[in-house]
Image (cartoon, rainbow, N blue to C red; front, side, top):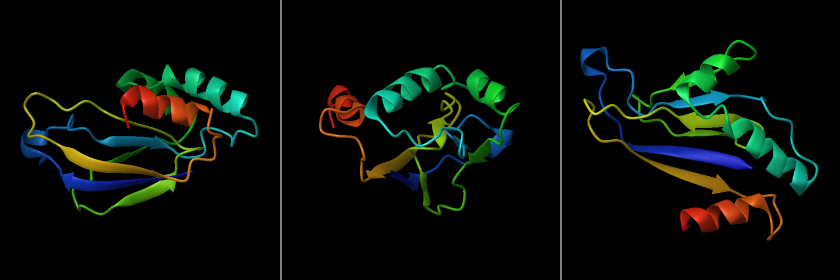
Length: 122
């Protein structure tokens, strides 16, 4: 339910570089799923917006916030209802490292959260 991002190493914005893995979030873009099948279908639906072009489309309908983590402050948000994703890190950029933690998964043991963790090997 709660997604926490802890910045560890954040590339500087030298030369006006924008593509440095910034986090994009659309708060309250999703409704809280009452059933696991609804959660699965929502994740499939929203996955098509998980790109720079997708976030541009979403920003025409709802507010999209961008966080660069230049101040190294952690960020916590409701990941279940907030659509979120990272932009790519430009080859011109320094490396980027963040720690992402999902605190409490409301999905059952057979749910999409468990499946995605298995796919990612976590």
